[in-house]
Length: 279
Image 1 (cartoon, rainbow, N blue to C red):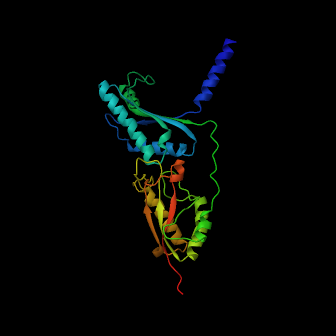
Image 2: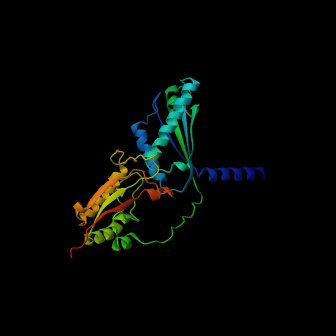
Image 3: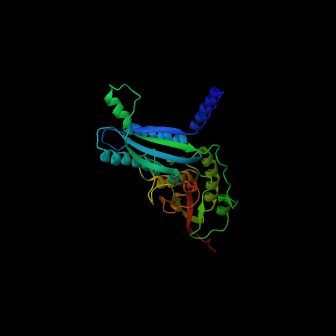
C-alpha cells in the first residue's frame, strides 16, 4: 500500500511539473548584459511560448560565489531585470510576470567539484519559469460590429479611424501572416476604387514600457510600429493604391486600448482628406 501511495505521489508531482516550462540564460563574469548567443536562445524560447495561454512567469537571477553578498544581490537583480526588458521589447504582456527577483549566490552540485570554472559558469544565470493555464482558458469573442470592408465602403469623414481587423503580425516581427494577406487583398481592392480618400496608416505595438516602441526582431531596430505600418503601406501600393494618397507612421504604444494585449498589436487607417467630386 505504501509503495502504491509513493507511485501516486510521484505521478502527481510529474504531471504538475509538466505544466511548467523552464529556460536558463547564462551570463559572463560580473556582467548583466545578455551575451548574443544567449539572447538568440532566449528569443527562440519566446517564439515557443508566445501563443500559449500563460498564467504567470517568474524570473530569478543568480550569481557565482566570487562577489560579496551585497554585490551578488545587486548583480543578480540586474540580470533578472535585463531578462524582463527582453520580454517587454518583444511585446510580451508584463502583467503575467509576477516575480523578477535577484537571488544572489546559488550553489550547484551537478558537476565535478574539481571543475570550479564550470560550476561558476552554471551559477551565473537567470532562470525563467513559465506557468501556462491548464487547460487553456476559453477566449471570449468580441461583440459583432461592422467589418473593415463595410466601413471603408461606407460614408467617411476626415478624422475617421478604422482598425484593420484580422491583419495580424507575429510577436516581435513586422511581416504579414499568410492569412492577413488574404484579408488585405480585399481591403486593397476597395481602396483602389475609393480614390476620394487620402489616409495615414498607423502602426501600434503592445506591452512595452510606457510609450516606447518595440524592437523588430528581424532588423534589431526599435521601430516595430513604424515597420508594421510601412509593411501595410508597401503591400497596398503593390496592389494598386497610389502612394501619393497614403502616408505611414509608427505610434509606438501611445494609444493602448486597455483590453487584451494582442489588440494593441494593430494597424489602423486614419482618414486625412476627402476629395469632393467636381460638379
